[in-house]
Structure formats: C-alpha cells, structure tokens
Image (cartoon, rainbow, N blue to C red):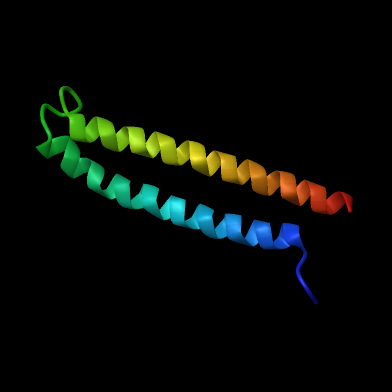
Length: 79
C-alpha cells in the first residue's frame, strides 16, 4: 500500500519532532553547568540566558509541529 502525502508529511514531522526533543534534552543536561560556571547563577549569566532562550525557541517549534501533526491527522480522518 502506498502512503499518501499527508502520511509522508506526518512521518517527516514526527522525525523532526523527535530531533527537536533530543536537542532540548541535550541542552537541559548542560544547563546546570552553564548556571554554575557562567556567573552568579541566573543573574548576569549570559550563557544561561541564551540557553534558556534557545529552549524557549525549541519549545515553540515543538508546539508548532505538534499542532501541524494534529491538523494533518484530523484532515486524514475526514477523508
């Protein structure tokens, strides 16, 4: 059985989602080090702030991908 376009898209989005979630996990593993070595904890610690901003950005990307998958799944159920 051949996959349709939405199934291919969902598969690609899920792979992208998994990669982004791995990036978040890897970044969080390094957060203690940045917190402790980069300055006064969270205060005046640009490395830590950049890391948290990156995590926020990745979280937004993850949310967008999840919503896109949800919409594709809803659309495929209607067909």
